[in-house]
Image 1: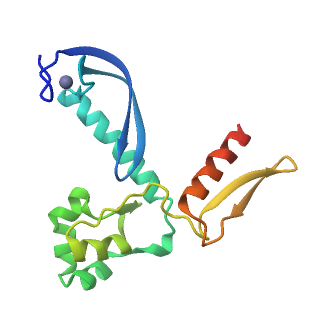
Image 2: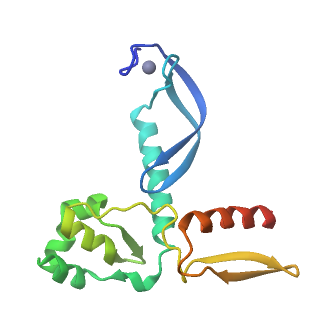
Amino acid sequence: MRCYECNGSLVKQTGSVTFNDTFVGKYSVDNISYLKCDCCGELAFPAGVSTVIDGAKKNKLQRLIGRLPVSEFITATEVASILGISRQAVHKHRRISRGFVHTFMNGAKILYHKKSVELFRDTGDGRFSLVGYGTGASWGVYRVIDGERKKMTVPQDWEIEKVNSLDSHLEEGLG
Ligand SMILES: [Zn+2]
């Protein structure tokens, strides 16, 4: 098989692949088969493997959305009033169910992220990057003080980069 990008040869490989997604950041899928271009490095995945990759991305998305404060989520009734449509239309909305609004399954109930709904109303796409989102007072970072794992709160005005570097630094210390 030939590469779509550069016409190089695609070579079959098996192993772990790390993806870097705009909305969820890095995530890895282990032990998958794929084709890799020996020239430009472009990867191609069989349909079954693509489904596995999509599943891994959805898992990470739900994990990141689940970290956002509960207070930032609203119900379908509130979404209906923001979008100016009926509640039923919210549930049936194709683009919303396809993931253009960040939602979280709380048991059987769907909760909608308010900022995402507003973004969706204004631009037609409510997705925003969840990488490093959720800093500020609600963002808990842990560190070990006198052998005990304690939660510390990061001040509101901290830059996301600072929090991320602190976070990884602290994680190293936790082992
Ligand atoms: Zn190529």
